[in-house]
Length: 107
Image 1 (cartoon, rainbow, N blue to C red):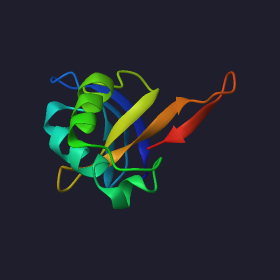
Image 2 (cartoon, rainbow, N blue to C red; image 1 turned 90 degrees about the horizontal axis):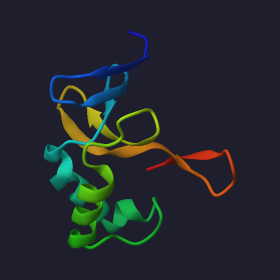
Image 3 (cartoon, one colour; image 1 turned 90 degrees about the vertical axis):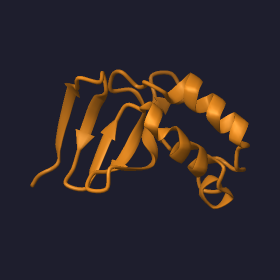
Image 4 (spheres, one colour; image 1 turned 30 degrees about the vertical axis):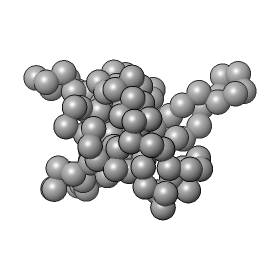
C-alpha cells in the first residue's frame, strides 16, 4: 500500500493529516496527554529534541495550551500514532523558522 496524504475530519473533530501503512499523523486528542507527558519528561528522549527533560507540570501545560486539538490544518505538530496498536509515540510536523518564509521539521 502506498503512503497517501489525506486530510479528513472525523466525527470527533480530529484531523488526519497523513497516513502510511504503519503510522497515522493526526491532531492531538485528550487521550494523548499522558503519553505526551511521558515522552517530554524522559531525559533520553529530550536530549534528541531540544535539550533537557521537562517537568510534568510544564509538559501538561504545553500539551493543553499548544497541542490539544491542534493542528487543525497542515501546519503544526502532529500526534504520531502506531496504527495497529493505536499507540501515541510522539509528535512531529512543521514549525516556523526564524528566517522569513521558512519552516523546519519539528518534534
